[in-house]
Structure formats: structure tokens, C-alpha cells
Image (tube, rainbow, N blue to C red; front, side, top):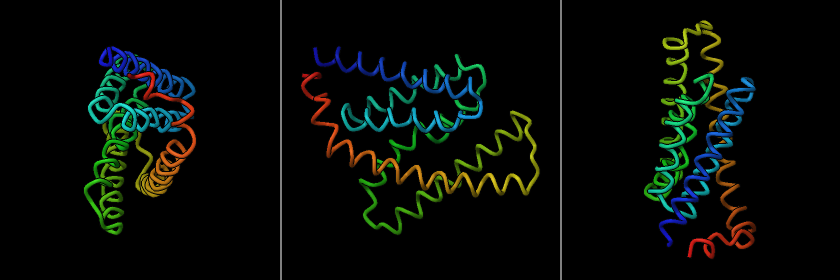
Length: 174
């Protein structure tokens, strides 16, 4: 019975993630915002259901968003960064004990993800904003990623301190 409940919850969370990404793709100006919002689902799944379920939700949401979204930028941003970052963050913080090393690794990951997203927008989506604009986007994206990392940490703390007892997910999954 527990596996059935976990699969059902994974399906619901996947549908919610795709719906959020779809809202971002339709509004077009809020695509990154909804992309980050949908990654909060992965954080929740990581806490309550474990890494395997979080990876399953990430993969299913990513595949469905590539298929279903009218514009693919939100899906690409989700697949390249926002969807997998909560899982990567969990494992990095579990393995790397030095805060300085952890920060450097995160900055390197953010830089790689931002570079890939800029390259995809330039070579696949054929958006060429020029070098100066690309550098500005890179720096602003890096700053947004650092804020995103901090917000995930704050939301996890809030979830453990206030919301987890109220939601009683552990009783639902028994």
C-alpha cells in the first residue's frame, strides 16, 4: 500500500510541476520564476519521499514539459538547472563539509548551468543578444542562483520547523 501511495503522490507532484512550467511558458515573462517554483516540488519530494522519488519526479516533469509546453525555454531551464539543483544541493551538502568548498562547487555548477543555458539560447533558439548582454545575463543569472540556493535553505528550514507537522505527510504514506 505504501508504494501505491508514493507513486500516486509522485504523479500528483509531477502534474503540478508540469502545470507550473506550463504557466511559465504561457506567460513567457515568468518562465524562470515558475521554473524555480516547480523545483520546490523536488525539494518537498526529496524530504518526504527520498532521492529516488525526487529523481523520478524531476525526470517525468522534464520529459513531459519538453513534450507539452508551447515554448521550450522553461523546459530547458528546468532540465538544465532548476529541476536537478535541489537534488544536487542535497548530495553536495551531505558530502562536502567545508562551507568554502561547498560555495565554490555551487558557483562552478551555477556558472556551468548558466553558460549552457546561454549557449542553448544562442545556438538552438537562435537568440543572439551580443557579448555584453550575454555577460550581463550570466552575472544576473549567477546572482539569481545564489539567491535561489539561499531560498531553498530557508524554505527547508521553514518546512521542518512549521509545515511538516501540520501537513502530516508521514501519516498519509503509512
